Length: 198
Image (spheres, rainbow, N blue to C red):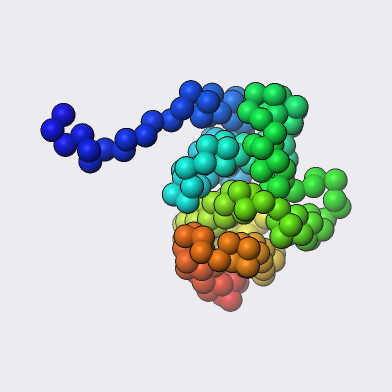
């Protein structure tokens, strides 16, 4: 091919391909809240967003697995993840996993922010990619559905704004040069406009 150098020169490794299959099985039958879109679309998007920041394969795998221990641990356990993909991947995932035993949304959010502020830089990349995708989707849904969207959440619009701003601030403090920060700022500003109008 004449212009082969214009195409990406890296291909996903067998390990990353196994990770995609594993995440797909773990989230099989689950859908994005209120959309009917298969849930696996979210971890795949988070992995692609994280890939714009790093080519560290463990981080990309953690991005794929970031909701498994929190949402579907019965489908794929921490021990299985460690055995198949290593302790570093598990630790990155654990750094972005909320504690479901805490009683309220606010308690879980506060604990998450605490662990993020003490966690690894790799966990911060996954958290940033996750919040970027979630907030992008929330804004897309708000543009389509308006304020009726807020009924899907266990938190108020103001709490959502606080949440995204707080995560962004932890990332900015710990990884000030992370490329996603400017993009998050734009999305948070758009969310603020919706919250002010709520």
